[in-house]
Length: 388
Image 1: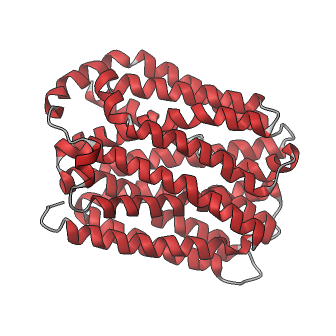
Image 2: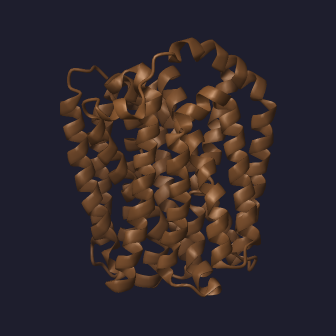
């Protein structure tokens, strides 16, 4: 039964990744058809992220009331419905409205699943589960790219992914009794919890909040604007750019798969350090002013590989850093900070791209990589008495 549950959790992580890279892959075509500026992608991503911030802060309450299984199934259903809505939308305003449930469906399930895995599974499973998120995030740009190159349009791309999400939703609802039994067994371990106010007062929490903000600013900006950077600045065709943008998520996927084999020996702190250094090196490769695109494309992969261990390692270390009894509340806060970075920073970059130039893309990413490294080291010092 435990093996069946972990398999279902793996599928749930695929569903988390599927929608995340669709907008960035389709936007070079979408914005011209909708008749809006390039930077308006940031508005849609901001609305989605605002929904995730709200639902992630509510995740502790929702999980205790409904259980992890039902929260997961309902959230994936909301996302599937929103993706179907995107496929039928014919205006920018409609996309903005549909983006609300799109975001609400993501935050609660993200926080609930991450906390569950951090408490009950080893670091290798955390890496591999987030690798499966990367599978979803890597597959969807290929689906979108195929629809664009085949003349089916971006609407069919969204429709295809919504069908996959609906299938996953059915599987999650069928498996609900299994989730319920597992949740009841672990309820007794979650009686002593800290509220939001108390969590902010715990030593090291501000540093992990800043680290999550910077990491998600780096990851979301890199993924969302890769296609536009390649097509607008480097002159790559829109269809090819959509395909190549998936290399970033491919790097995250293979990196997390590899980290699963070494995570228990290397430890969370060391993996975070290695990841930050690799991500910074990849961004520098994108920044190099070479005529060929090879360096930039390789840089996207290296940046993705560097990003691979950072998110799962910070999440997995939360119970050790701050206590098991506090982990759900703090992971909810971490998710909120992560999505705040996702909300604000790609949008801000869109404004920079419109007013200065999209050539700033790698410089922007490098700044967040450096600040992320500094915040993670301050977190290490603040929690040095805790054993990871």
